[in-house]
Image (tube, rainbow, N blue to C red):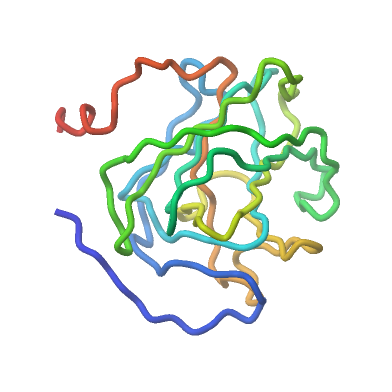
Length: 217
């Protein structure tokens, strides 16, 4: 049984930034890429720390092999009906591990689908959201060994779930003009990485549901 933890936290100093409250401050890490997953910072309830919301949020990644990204998966809490698409972008870092100076190389409004993980926190369901990049558009073709940033644009109805740092630079959030690291006193004052996975082939439609997976344990 998972217990709901409710914390009343002081207002954050940077207008528009918000978070859900801290849980599980030190969870397990993750393995490397498997099968079609070319970058894996996937969700684990035991590793869940918080959920962040701002105007934009970005987390970095480096691929071990060249890949064309066809699917992106994130773990999100929605406070109202989940949207059917989001504006996503990928930016290439210039070597300083700072999205403020990165160059956007791909952006698109990407349709998405949502699967309930069966987990709950803060009184909300935790959803696995999968973005399928249209084959009529050019898939983002990325090079191994280069640092990139996955950028998510919020609609103010969701929180991107985060964990203690796992890989690379911490996640960053933006007020629409400037990016701030999540451990900045101006934002969340806590170092975090976002839950996400990148796939170079489409996610199988007949994959097992979260409910079926949970019956194995």
